[in-house]
Every structure is written in C-alpha cells, then in structure tokens.
Amino acid sequence: MLIYQATASAPVNIACIKYWGKRDTKLILPTNSSLSVTLDQDHLRSTTTSRADPTFKKDRLWLNGTEEEIKAGGRLATCIAELKKQRRQVEENHPNIPIISNYAVHICSHNNFPTAAGLASSASGFAALVASLAALYKLPATPSELSLIARQGSGSACRSLMGGFVAWEKGVREDGSDSLAIQIAPREHWPDLHAVIVVVSDHKKGTSSTAGMQQTVETSALLQHRINHVVPARMTAISEAIKAKDFDKFAKITMQDSNQFHAVCLDTEPPIFYMNDVSRAIIALIVEYNRVSVAATGHLKAAYTYDAGPNAVIYAPAANIPEIINLIAHYFPQNQTFSDPFKLFTNQVPGKL
Ligand code: PMV
Image (cartoon, rainbow, N blue to C red; front, side, top):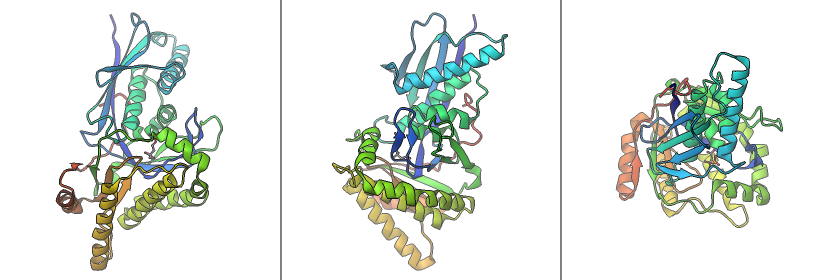
C-alpha cells in the first residue's frame, strides 16, 4: 500500500518593517507592505508532517502533541481547502497521478521553542503546514505562489516560506492575488548580519495581533499617516540598505519602524502596550551602546526591534554579538537569550528539510 506523507520545516521571521493592519480580514490583506529577515536557528522552527489516507474520517491537526480543532471556515480549514483544490487541479490535468485530494489529512506540527513565548510561532507554523501539504500533493507551486496560501493562515507566515530578506508586497487587487512574498536577497548575500533574541517574558500576550490590528485600523489616526506617508519610502530605503549591506541605514530604519509600530499601538483606543519596562530598558541600553560607538567610529553597532510582545530582537554585525550578549547578560541576568548566529533559508524547496 502506498503511503502519502511529507514533512517540511520552516523558521520564524522577524520584521524590520512591520505589518500592522488588515484591509481585508478574511483574505488577510494588509494595509501596508512589510519586510523581514527569516531566521534559521535550529531552535526556532516548526516542523510539520502531513499524511493523506483513505481510512481517515476527517482532517485533524495536532500541535506539539495536543489536538487542535479545525474550525469550519477558519484559517486552518481555509489553507487545507486551498491546497486540496490545487491538488485537484493537478489531478485533472494529469490523469495518471493518484487521486488523493479527496482523502482526509492528518497533520502533526511541532515547534522546537515555547509556542506561547511571543516568538512568531504562527508564522513558522503556517509556513511549515503549507509547505508540508504542498510537498504531500507534489504541487508545482513556487514559494511566492505558496505564500498566497500561507498568508491566509497568518499574515506574517507568508514571509517564512523563503529565506534571507523577504518583502510582503501588500498588493492592490481585491482578490489578494498580488499580495505575496518575494525574496529581496538570499541569506548568503549578507552573512555578517546576525540576530540575538532576548526572551523578556514568555507569557501569552494580552492583546492578540488580530484584535490589536482591528482596533488600530478602527481608531488610530497615526496609522493612516504611517501607511500612506511612511512605509512606502521605508520599504524602498531598507531594500537598498540590504542590497548595499549598509548596516547603519538598515539599523536606523529598523529601529524607527519598531518605534512607530509601537507608537501606533499606543495611539489606539484603548491604548495597547506590548513592550514592558525591561523592553524599554533594553532600548535604552542599545541607544547608549550606539551613541558611544557613533562618537568613536561614526557607526551604529546594533538595531533593536519588537513585535507584538515584550521580547527584543537585536540585529548586529557578527563581530558585535559577543559584546551584546555580555551587555544583556550583565544588565538583565534573568533573561533567556537565543544567541546562535542565524543562517537563513535560501531557495527553500517545500518538503525538503
Ligand atoms: O501575522 P500576525 O497576525 O501574527 O501579525 C504579526 C505582526 C507583527 O509581528 C507585529 C509584525 C510583522 O510584520 O511580523
């Protein structure tokens, strides 16, 4: 008997230009484009195995060993249905391949880092899920084409299907067919750029990104300024900085965008605070570290960025990483630091580990 099964793995990505706000909540179409770096640390990835079998009664999914409900019409169901539809099209066009699109699937997903620790587990999770089903169904889709599906699971997941430096173009079409991820540069382009992740708190965040975005779109005046007058120029400038491997420019834009994203959250009703006192103290530390460096050498040494939670991600040239880890360990001895230099995915073929 033939076994139809495939495994794929995807890492988390951390945005330098933040996605915040949906113009279509069902299709998950963003109000602005965004850009991230896909981390490739061994301890920050989701690995997912999907299996199709005629004896399975219904689609089921386990996350870290616990079964999760696949709600009808929900994001998981949408992604699974879209991938089955694409398999059906392949079956119709190639009469000799096995018909498996009508089998139910069982999906097992595992994160090798704390799921609730605010480390973008939905991004790696949905990317790995889409990549594993695409491999199971042997779809001819490119990572950019698959990003259209992953986006409907969790917006930021579309960027985890590719390695290196990845832009999510917001697109203009109402059906979302041009709201997809593209690789700006592969990891090998800038191997000297490393990341340190400082886990400030592993508590589940108070306001989910979905609720936070909705509230921001409904009540923040600053968001309109951000999406119309700030992000487009920043997308161009940071892409140029990456292409030129210009750390000063990259760092400045990354920190500015993190600051503005958190300012937009503060501008909502009621205000949302994702950073805490430790997050702010880490910002003060990096600002001082950079101030001393600029005075001595004219160059920045590190860039902080924060997602919808208190944990810091610090980008820096490799030579500065030991110093940064020592500084963090000295001033914040209780915090857990993920500090491996990251290697990024390049030319990731869905289904290949
Ligand atoms: O994809 P979501 O719904 O988890 O939203 C992610 C939003 C941020 O992480 C704050 C920013 C981003 O671009 O990843």
